[in-house]
Image (cartoon, rainbow, N blue to C red):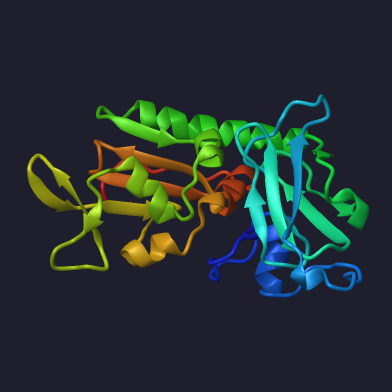
Length: 256
């Protein structure tokens, strides 16, 4: 599985949409011939909902234009709104962890009608996802302090654009360190202290710049310890790899 969203140039390979997007970069979306005067019209927005085979909404699914770097995340009830520019024929790629990826064509006459896109569950991947989430939760339960979790439903409902925005909303005292403006600090117990930050179980040395490189839609989970002592950020790419190739989780420590 792969990326699939703008502003994330460093990784290829987590979700088919993201994989294609990371390879193709800024390739133009597939579309038909736009009618005369289309450039003068308001942007077309493809709207719809992502559901499973039983019609249950799937939150936080990725919906994007195939062969493009343009994608959005469905909200907590599976709804999405994808701006596409001009009227035309578009191919959408839709994915979520634990489900089989699918592609659908949207014809010019269909863009004004809400779409219902159904994803089939993948029992093997879904079981792997449940095991992975359970392992992360068990590890959090063994931590004696306070842990704030931002999960998929909350990420799907947020208006935050980047991982940095997500952390700013979760840790109100987050700010650039006084002597290291590229790193982030928090105010704890009346003093300014560096934030220990891990992304995908590795130290994030890039500070704010590294957080800004990930869109909120790329994230699967965020854990904040003791109101800002440390934060652990997990991307969809990393969780997908944990699903497919289980790995040992190191005990919670403040240094990844």
